[in-house]
Length: 133
Image 1: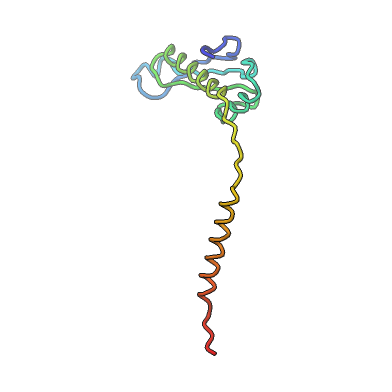
Image 2: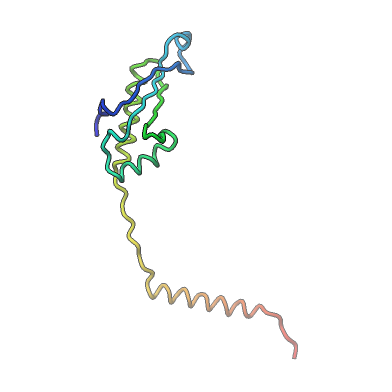
């Protein structure tokens, strides 16, 4: 997924941003809040589940991904930043996780563990109270 499909974008709102910008900050709404409907993206179930984990609180109960970009001083730069961040998040969610292969403990390793436990038992038993007969 190189680009965000336009039909998935629910809303693109411009807000007044905080931070650098001088007097421009008070006059121009440069920050962008981008809302994307993740159901319209047509993601496979594993990718949707991973996206829920990656997005965290940015994903609403209604299935909208909300990204706010206010890093730059212009609307265009913030708009492209927000779209890039959404695409990156989706690409990361589409990566398949490697399956974990369960391994078995070898018989030799089990035997060594038991022998070591027996050795410690003997050492600890030798630390008991000394009886004078």
